[in-house]
Image (tube, rainbow, N blue to C red; front, side, top):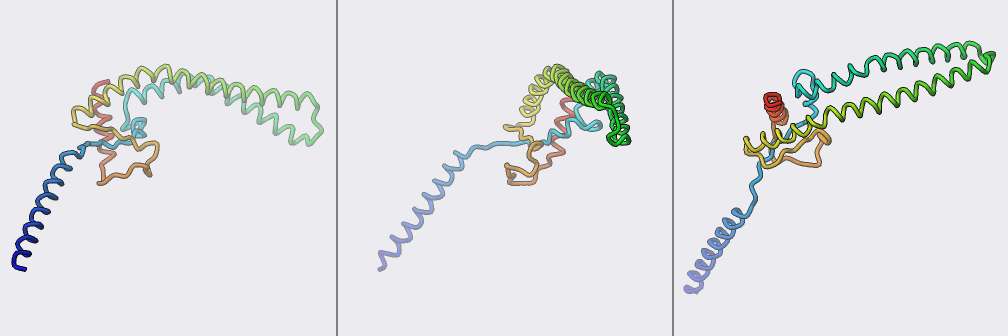
Length: 183
C-alpha cells in the first residue's frame, strides 16, 4: 500500500504535466484572429458618412430631378382625370377612360425608365469609388492589425455572434474618417 501511494502520486503528477503540456501545444495551434466589426449603413449618413459616397447619391438625385418632377406632373394629371371619372360615375365617354389608361401606362413606363436609368447612372458613378474604397478598407485593416472586417449592416441581429461587446459605431466612424482622408 505504501508503494501504491507514491506511484499513484507520480501518475497524477505526470498526467497533470502531460495535460498542461498538451494544453500549451493546442494553445499554440489556436489561430489568433483580430476582427473589426462595422455597420456600413453609416457610410451613407449625410452627416457622418463617406463624403464622396454621399456626393454620388446627391449627384444622381440632381441629375434625375427634372425627369422626376415631370413624372410627378404626369401622376397628378392621371389622378385629376381619375377623380373626374369617379365624379362622372359611369357617365364619362370611352375616350376619357382610354385617356386615363394611356396616362397610367405612361406613368408606369416613365417610372420604370427613371428607375432603370438612375440605377445605371449610380452604378457607373459608384463602381470606381467602390474599387478605391475596397483598397482603403484593406489598408485600414492592415494599419490597425485587423485580419477580418465584418459588416453587420445586412444582418444586425446577427448570424455572427461576438464573444465580447464590440464598439461597432466607433470602428465604423474611424473607418469613415480614414476613407474620407484618403478619397
